[in-house]
Image (cartoon, rainbow, N blue to C red; front, side, top):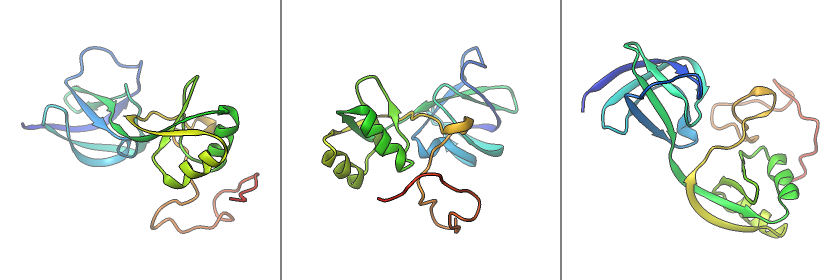
Length: 170
């Protein structure tokens, strides 16, 4: 397949209409991007070149310079399905700043054996599943939650840049 061009604008779900020219299927981490060449569902390539890093959600669309829309879809990925006392379990998951998808009868988190062990110790039933992951957005309108391990190259202690009002006795 050929190149569909450059996509430089995001259209949020519910704020675009008409048929999409193609689909871009990305996992949770892949939906956090600014500039990257990606392969679409059709096999065509697109250069995503956004003004700033964004968190894309399933149902959003990227718009190319020519006006073509590329629908964003959440790819299936390894997750843990958590059942039990959901309020208590969600509190413990949130206390670790772990992205979590909330349903009426279960929670979904990314596969993590340490969290699985902790949740099982708290009385949860934890089962591996493969499904699209669309967790809750962060507080105050931010699109992402993240843990305290910000990854390589992100060197700050919690006195620099942000603070936390809660205990982190892990």
